[in-house]
Length: 158
Picture (cartoon, rainbow, N blue to C red):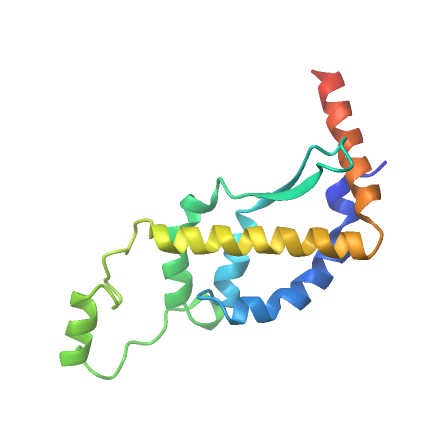
């Protein structure tokens, strides 16, 4: 049997399309969301238990990419830096920088805990949406069973 994650590739693409409006309404750009998703893996907890099985997101790698989100925001098309503003660092720019809202803000290179919490919450919502989609398509039990089989195979190998 194939890996359960391979089984849901098409479902993830469908959910990605449906979830795009959630991303648009969030604090994250599509590029930032892409980076967040590359640092996220999905697991099925309790796959052998039909009533307790749950699709969950492993976000343990998110803290390592949070500082990169700022760089993604500052990067334009084709990975080029965004052009500097024509304001020449005027009065408003100095106020923004003092408040940590400018390019050299207080979160530069660090972890913005609020941003991390928002990313984790959005990823958790995505996981719930994906599981609901699999259930509505009648595929959840098949995927869950494949995950349980994979888990059993892994335990046998150890």
